[in-house]
Image 1: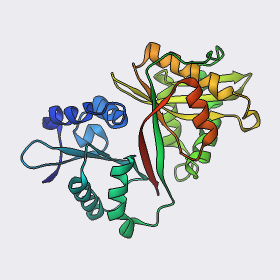
Image 2 (image 1 turned 60 degrees about the vertical axis):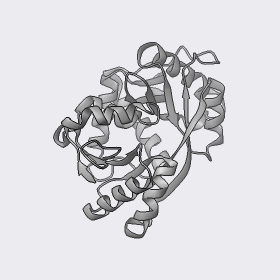
Image 3 (image 1 turned 90 degrees about the vertical axis):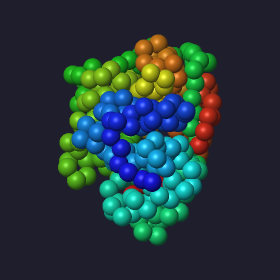
Image 4 (image 1 turned 90 degrees about the horizontal axis):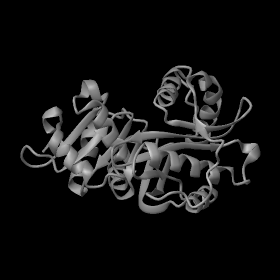
Length: 275
């Protein structure tokens, strides 16, 4: 009932992803870019179901991400992950799915470094309610070294570990460079200093997902993130996708208020288990 999928399963997987395009934007973006062959996807896509057509899938790469899964399929995915051994740095996705997988995996993989079981998933399809910051723009390739320290600071603050650990930050730098090259990194500069930044981490025809929102700690509480996010939303709606989404920790009240002012509304709830 569970197998590793390949490109012959593309139609079935796309049909599952299309059922919730905002919720599934991360996995859909990876499939759009790499297909389902593990060699090109850089991960495995597991499929669950009776017969040849999967009724639920799970992306297994740096993140473990269930899609369109019910309790039997989630437990099957968790058992398969347990047999392989932990290869991911997080389990992330719809809260009700992540909680079932973690229920099965916690005795084997726990304790987690951190669990965040209530992360509102927000989205907007409308122009921002506030005036965008006209100084926020796409980061140029020659500005990568100016952006990178802010990106590292954001990642360390958000995730709790530095992305430079292990390989000195080579992989993380490559990812930031990729986003800059694709025109998906936005920032406001004050000279060489980054005041505000955000990236668009996942993109499909239906939606995009903003990540890495960060304001210089010395300038927080001044509304910089509100106007900055308004600029990012306006640019994304114009050039990237018809729906802009992100997810945020439920305890981050300042960020939630900022996103609400811009025009985001909650469309679901995510959860993350961090290792």
